[in-house]
Length: 293
Ligand SMILES: Nc1nc(=O)c2c([nH]1)NC[C@@H]1CN(c3ccc(C(=O)N[C@@H](CCC(=O)O)C(=O)O)cc3)C=[N+]21
Image (cartoon, rainbow, N blue to C red; front, side, top):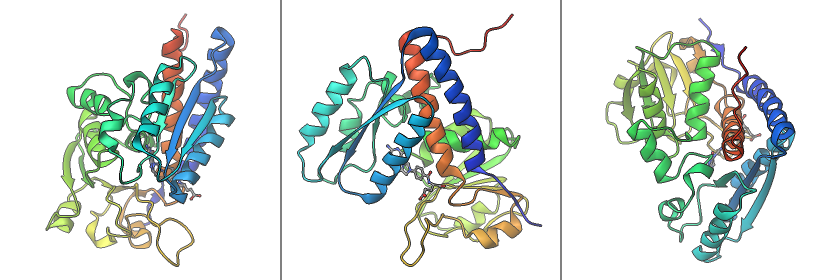
């Protein structure tokens, strides 16, 4: 058996076309142009690339974007001042604070200052707390993109055993909660789980979000499982990012799998744009729901 590929590029493109159409409706009706502001602190070249990708995708969807670079040795107050200004700016609908911030900065504390209604990245403590409480909030874009990909391929979540490998604030934890909200039975494992293979082999839906290149091998996957790989590891000697799943062996066992690149990554960006559009529509008091007769 060879797994079907869950095409994140094509799915993201379709979603971004929907966003572009809805953005045009919003702008035509209200004059509001959705605007995303990104704070890019530090000199991580990968972060700069991601922020650039997000800016390009925004422009294509009719969303304005602006990036504020902050040097690696800048004081934390520089990020805080910029954030305060963006929180207060009514023309800015979404704020993205690219992770990770330089080591000397207190990231959780800075994120606590992000306005919930502008947290289109869904990673501020208020948004995560609301998710835990079952209240409406923006959801972290990568986990949300993974759920959206399953839905677009009509892959059922309810009643399935989903195993999440990874427990980060941005990915593993919110992903587990989103899967729970879809009525999956969820197990969370991580880098210190001793009997990892034993647990991953029980997964109907296996989500790798641990940041260890090719940790998950084919023999750790239940035959017929759906495998979502959120890994984007830089490995020396490999031109492209390497996932957390060993793709070739997994392909033989799974029923469906996301490639890296071209799987989860592009979905992240689509969700960020969708959240930015939603934030702008709410600020303008405009309903994006299709009109019913
Ligand atoms: N506050 C915050 N929010 C994030 O969402 C966030 C972050 N910080 N820090 C870094 C990670 C990383 N990340 C990716 C987004 C898209 C791709 C992506 O689209 N990758 C392409 C490949 C791109 C290429 O290398 O050509 C793909 O998978 O096909 C990858 C990684 C978002 N992150």
